[in-house]
Length: 182
Image (cartoon, rainbow, N blue to C red):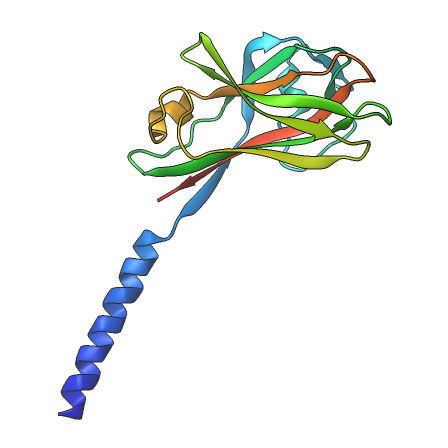
């Protein structure tokens, strides 16, 4: 009798382990791979008119970056395809490695460009004089209110908008997007 219970227990444990393995979320990092609709920040340290090359590194490179000194200026990038097909997107998080240009505080917002026409802004980020990562999480597509689809992620255009026009400027040295999916 104990062999039957042990075998049944083993089968249940294996089944649970398999289910948990399938239910575990994965993440994928996508980076800019082209210039978006907006190209209004200033390229510093990179010998190209392709501004996205200043912020697409896997490892941060603070010798090239984008800078802005005034408010209401937009910059956007196209992103790599995910390679995903029909996975469920749990959320996406935009990351920016940024700081203020001088010792005063500066602000910017993340930007999503939807269907090549509509701009959606994230919360205001207050930059400090030291580089920090700033994040903007979207559990759903803010344009639709529905969960993200793989095709929406593959067509993603995003970037940033400066919001403060006095007291210095802002620098963005790296940006990327993390896709959380099942």
